[in-house]
Length: 421
Ligand code: GUN
Ligand code: FE
Image (cartoon, rainbow, N blue to C red; front, side, top):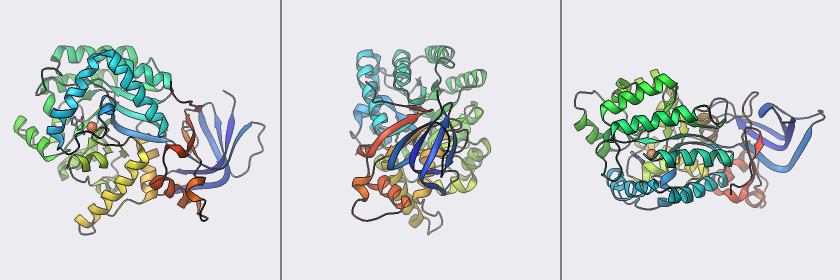
């Protein structure tokens, strides 16, 4: 691919809470990667001029359930465990049917593209064929993703359960076939959560992760009802995280734990030691009455954090909606902790939605040299035409009040992506 540059108002983040802003500048792309951001450019390369638009790194969703897409907005007047039983498990069982899977997964991918999420860590279902289909469709779309076949072998309804042998066998088959098949779409080991996985299954998944160097994603300490079940199932473990840890699923390979709302200080020490990523999913945590995760505490410890829509625990796929939710709950957390855990400001949330989550993928989510060029072009004229705003304010206004109609172009790893079919 020939080198090229995008011209516009460039905003990105190198570190938590810091904007890098170059107005009317150039971001130069060479071999799919960012070469640099410049005020002036005298290179004989193609320039795509986006005028007064904003150019920002595209969004990363660190936790989302593709098969729950058709359930978005349903059943959210229930808590986690009844919601899983009543709405989520019956829906996921439908993915045995590949025609249904194709219909939902195509719509899901289109929606991701639309709202400017270009990398995602995705849960599938227990079904191998539907999970492979999801990987194929994502690759066709050009989006980047980790995709997990979900493992669940106990405490699950008989229409959505698998034997330990099948669970391991199908997971292994996917890893062997898909670990090196696609550039941007990769497998990830995905035990659903402790209640639905026997310890034997967890240990065997831990061994697979180690053998193939495959990353891991799951849920941790999301909701009181769930934690009580975990305590009953594993009375001899000192906490929830230590069960994953004992099974080799807690940071031996790179690991994401969604939620971490109710983690203890001991669990936080372990998350820090193992550099486990937190996927903060505030919309879901509000909907399912889970609570408010202590994100400021994680950040001040240096624990890596990204944002997750957690559709359909979350009711919106758009990461700008999740950023706003994260800001709102962080304000409440600040009040709840007697002003101890400071609110997250917009610059910090922008970092989390781009480089914070992106770092799980490698050099993703920034315009620093060597980063894969993932970008959105935002035409926000409709949002700022009434009075002059600084570039920082324009970004803030887009995050709080803009939507997919403002996104006029999406790039992933240097390639412009058209709307998936
Ligand atoms: N814990 C186990 N499964 C799920 C799920 O599908 N969504 C959420 N939010 N939490 C879970
Ligand atoms: Fe989830």
